View 1 (spheres, each protein chain N blue to C red):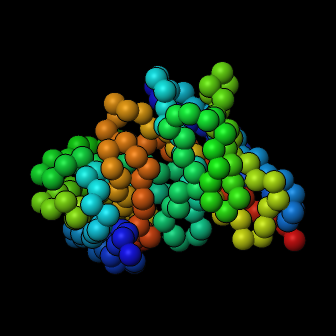
View 2 (view 1 turned 90 degrees about the horizontal axis):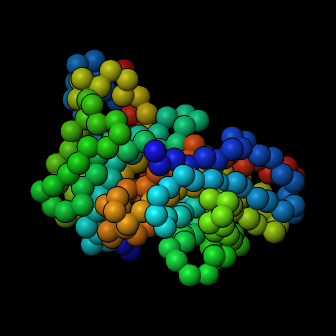
Length: 114
Length: 111
Protein backbone atom coordinates (compact mmCIF):
# COMPACT_ATOMS: atom_id res chain seq x y z
CA UNK A 1 0.00 0.00 0.00
CA UNK A 2 1.10 3.54 -0.69
CA UNK A 3 2.32 5.39 2.37
CA UNK A 4 4.29 8.40 3.53
CA UNK A 5 6.27 8.41 6.76
CA UNK A 6 7.57 11.41 8.64
CA UNK A 7 9.54 9.75 11.45
CA UNK A 8 9.84 12.84 13.64
CA UNK A 9 6.63 14.06 15.27
CA UNK A 10 8.28 17.06 16.92
CA UNK A 11 11.66 18.73 16.38
CA UNK A 12 13.19 21.65 18.26
CA UNK A 13 16.09 23.62 16.80
CA UNK A 14 17.85 26.80 17.83
CA UNK A 15 17.40 29.90 15.73
CA UNK A 16 20.18 30.08 13.17
CA UNK A 17 20.83 26.33 13.24
CA UNK A 18 20.37 24.09 10.25
CA UNK A 19 17.27 21.96 9.79
CA UNK A 20 16.47 18.66 8.14
CA UNK A 21 12.98 17.14 8.20
CA UNK A 22 12.73 13.55 7.05
CA UNK A 23 10.21 12.04 4.67
CA UNK A 24 10.12 8.46 3.38
CA UNK A 25 7.56 7.08 0.98
CA UNK A 26 6.38 3.78 -0.35
CA UNK A 27 5.07 4.16 -3.87
CA UNK A 28 4.92 2.32 -7.17
CA UNK A 29 6.13 4.29 -10.16
CA UNK A 30 7.82 7.67 -10.24
CA UNK A 31 6.16 9.76 -7.56
CA UNK A 32 5.36 13.42 -7.42
CA UNK A 33 6.65 14.83 -4.14
CA UNK A 34 5.62 17.90 -2.17
CA UNK A 35 6.38 19.70 1.05
CA UNK A 36 3.75 21.92 2.66
CA UNK A 37 3.84 24.15 5.75
CA UNK A 38 0.89 24.91 8.03
CA UNK A 39 0.63 27.61 10.69
CA UNK A 40 -1.91 27.06 13.50
CA UNK A 41 -5.50 27.45 12.33
CA UNK A 42 -4.46 28.03 8.73
CA UNK A 43 -4.47 26.09 5.49
CA UNK A 44 -1.42 24.48 3.93
CA UNK A 45 1.08 26.48 1.90
CA UNK A 46 3.21 24.80 -0.77
CA UNK A 47 6.94 25.07 -0.05
CA UNK A 48 8.29 23.09 -2.99
CA UNK A 49 7.56 20.24 -5.37
CA UNK A 50 9.37 17.60 -7.38
CA UNK A 51 8.02 16.11 -10.59
CA UNK A 52 11.13 15.16 -12.57
CA UNK A 53 14.58 16.39 -13.53
CA UNK A 54 17.09 17.79 -11.06
CA UNK A 55 16.70 15.90 -7.81
CA UNK A 56 17.59 18.94 -5.69
CA UNK A 57 14.68 21.38 -5.73
CA UNK A 58 14.54 24.88 -4.35
CA UNK A 59 11.45 26.27 -2.72
CA UNK A 60 10.17 29.38 -1.04
CA UNK A 61 11.45 30.82 2.26
CA UNK A 62 14.95 29.39 1.71
CA UNK A 63 13.91 25.72 1.83
CA UNK A 64 15.24 22.97 -0.40
CA UNK A 65 14.63 19.24 -0.70
CA UNK A 66 16.47 16.36 -2.31
CA UNK A 67 14.80 13.37 -3.97
CA UNK A 68 16.77 10.17 -3.40
CA UNK A 69 15.14 7.32 -5.28
CA UNK A 70 17.46 4.67 -3.81
CA UNK A 71 16.41 5.65 -0.30
CA UNK A 72 12.76 6.49 -1.15
CA UNK A 73 13.31 9.78 0.63
CA UNK A 74 12.53 13.44 0.06
CA UNK A 75 14.04 15.30 3.01
CA UNK A 76 13.47 19.00 3.55
CA UNK A 77 16.41 21.22 4.52
CA UNK A 78 17.14 24.79 5.48
CA UNK A 79 20.64 26.05 6.30
CA UNK A 80 19.59 28.61 8.92
CA UNK A 81 16.24 28.50 10.71
CA UNK A 82 14.33 31.66 11.64
CA UNK A 83 11.83 31.92 14.51
CA UNK A 84 9.07 32.44 11.94
CA UNK A 85 9.70 28.94 10.57
CA UNK A 86 8.00 27.41 13.62
CA UNK A 87 5.01 25.53 12.16
CA UNK A 88 3.80 22.08 11.11
CA UNK A 89 5.40 20.58 8.01
CA UNK A 90 3.78 17.94 5.82
CA UNK A 91 5.31 15.76 3.16
CA UNK A 92 2.94 14.49 0.44
CA UNK A 93 3.22 12.07 -2.46
CA UNK A 94 1.15 11.72 -5.60
CA UNK A 95 1.29 9.70 -8.77
CA UNK A 96 0.19 10.05 -12.40
CA UNK A 97 -2.57 7.47 -12.25
CA UNK A 98 -4.10 8.68 -8.99
CA UNK A 99 -6.20 11.48 -10.41
CA UNK A 100 -4.34 14.14 -8.50
CA UNK A 101 -4.85 12.48 -5.12
CA UNK A 102 -2.08 12.98 -2.59
CA UNK A 103 -1.06 10.88 0.38
CA UNK A 104 0.09 13.01 3.32
CA UNK A 105 2.50 12.15 6.09
CA UNK A 106 1.49 12.68 9.71
CA UNK A 107 3.40 15.94 9.91
CA UNK A 108 6.41 17.22 11.85
CA UNK A 109 5.95 20.07 14.28
CA UNK A 110 8.92 22.42 14.33
CA UNK A 111 9.70 24.55 17.36
CA UNK A 112 12.44 27.20 17.23
CA UNK A 113 14.40 28.19 20.34
CA UNK A 114 15.65 31.78 20.57
CA UNK B 1 -6.08 37.52 -6.68
CA UNK B 2 -6.81 33.89 -7.48
CA UNK B 3 -7.38 31.54 -4.61
CA UNK B 4 -9.63 29.25 -2.64
CA UNK B 5 -12.23 30.59 -0.24
CA UNK B 6 -13.70 28.48 2.51
CA UNK B 7 -16.62 29.65 4.61
CA UNK B 8 -17.49 29.94 7.35
CA UNK B 9 -14.23 29.92 9.32
CA UNK B 10 -16.02 28.52 12.39
CA UNK B 11 -19.18 26.41 12.39
CA UNK B 12 -21.21 24.79 15.12
CA UNK B 13 -23.49 21.80 14.70
CA UNK B 14 -26.29 20.62 16.92
CA UNK B 15 -27.09 16.95 17.38
CA UNK B 16 -29.02 15.51 14.43
CA UNK B 17 -28.29 18.49 12.21
CA UNK B 18 -26.71 18.57 8.76
CA UNK B 19 -24.29 21.41 8.04
CA UNK B 20 -22.73 22.50 4.77
CA UNK B 21 -19.21 23.86 4.35
CA UNK B 22 -18.56 26.09 1.37
CA UNK B 23 -15.52 25.94 -0.92
CA UNK B 24 -15.09 28.24 -3.92
CA UNK B 25 -12.06 28.60 -6.20
CA UNK B 26 -11.25 31.04 -9.00
CA UNK B 27 -8.06 29.31 -10.13
CA UNK B 28 -9.81 27.54 -13.02
CA UNK B 29 -8.71 24.21 -11.57
CA UNK B 30 -10.48 21.06 -12.70
CA UNK B 31 -9.91 19.00 -9.55
CA UNK B 32 -11.12 19.77 -6.03
CA UNK B 33 -10.67 17.92 -2.73
CA UNK B 34 -11.96 17.83 0.82
CA UNK B 35 -9.77 16.77 3.74
CA UNK B 36 -10.36 16.28 7.42
CA UNK B 37 -7.59 17.12 9.90
CA UNK B 38 -7.65 16.03 13.52
CA UNK B 39 -5.15 17.22 16.17
CA UNK B 40 -1.75 15.62 15.74
CA UNK B 41 -2.78 13.84 12.58
CA UNK B 42 -2.18 14.33 8.92
CA UNK B 43 -4.83 15.03 6.33
CA UNK B 44 -7.39 12.38 5.46
CA UNK B 45 -9.22 12.56 2.15
CA UNK B 46 -13.03 12.69 2.36
CA UNK B 47 -14.12 13.24 -1.26
CA UNK B 48 -12.56 14.49 -4.46
CA UNK B 49 -13.79 15.61 -7.84
CA UNK B 50 -11.82 15.66 -11.08
CA UNK B 51 -14.51 17.24 -13.27
CA UNK B 52 -17.90 18.88 -12.95
CA UNK B 53 -20.80 16.56 -12.10
CA UNK B 54 -18.45 13.78 -11.01
CA UNK B 55 -16.85 12.93 -7.67
CA UNK B 56 -15.33 9.96 -5.87
CA UNK B 57 -15.15 8.82 -2.28
CA UNK B 58 -11.89 9.19 -0.44
CA UNK B 59 -10.70 7.25 2.58
CA UNK B 60 -13.29 8.51 5.09
CA UNK B 61 -16.44 9.37 3.09
CA UNK B 62 -18.98 7.86 5.51
CA UNK B 63 -21.26 10.53 7.00
CA UNK B 64 -20.33 13.12 4.37
CA UNK B 65 -21.77 14.14 1.00
CA UNK B 66 -20.66 16.51 -1.78
CA UNK B 67 -21.83 17.98 -5.06
CA UNK B 68 -19.97 19.49 -8.01
CA UNK B 69 -22.49 21.39 -10.10
CA UNK B 70 -20.04 24.13 -11.03
CA UNK B 71 -16.32 24.07 -11.70
CA UNK B 72 -15.73 26.77 -9.10
CA UNK B 73 -17.69 25.20 -6.24
CA UNK B 74 -17.39 21.99 -4.21
CA UNK B 75 -19.56 22.15 -1.06
CA UNK B 76 -19.27 19.51 1.65
CA UNK B 77 -22.23 18.46 3.79
CA UNK B 78 -21.54 16.89 7.15
CA UNK B 79 -24.61 14.78 7.85
CA UNK B 80 -26.05 13.63 11.15
CA UNK B 81 -24.66 10.19 10.32
CA UNK B 82 -21.15 11.50 11.01
CA UNK B 83 -20.89 10.76 14.72
CA UNK B 84 -17.61 12.50 15.36
CA UNK B 85 -17.64 15.60 13.15
CA UNK B 86 -15.49 17.88 15.31
CA UNK B 87 -12.42 18.60 13.20
CA UNK B 88 -10.67 21.09 10.94
CA UNK B 89 -11.84 20.78 7.34
CA UNK B 90 -9.63 21.79 4.43
CA UNK B 91 -10.57 22.25 0.80
CA UNK B 92 -8.02 22.15 -2.00
CA UNK B 93 -7.89 22.38 -5.78
CA UNK B 94 -5.39 21.45 -8.47
CA UNK B 95 -4.85 20.99 -12.19
CA UNK B 96 -4.85 17.21 -12.83
CA UNK B 97 -1.74 15.90 -11.04
CA UNK B 98 -0.31 19.28 -10.12
CA UNK B 99 0.30 20.73 -6.69
CA UNK B 100 -2.80 21.22 -4.58
CA UNK B 101 -3.68 24.72 -3.37
CA UNK B 102 -5.50 24.99 -0.06
CA UNK B 103 -8.09 27.23 1.51
CA UNK B 104 -7.80 28.51 5.09
CA UNK B 105 -10.09 25.85 6.50
CA UNK B 106 -13.32 25.59 8.48
CA UNK B 107 -13.32 24.49 12.11
CA UNK B 108 -16.44 22.51 12.96
CA UNK B 109 -17.51 21.97 16.55
CA UNK B 110 -20.46 20.26 18.24
CA UNK B 111 -22.81 22.23 20.49
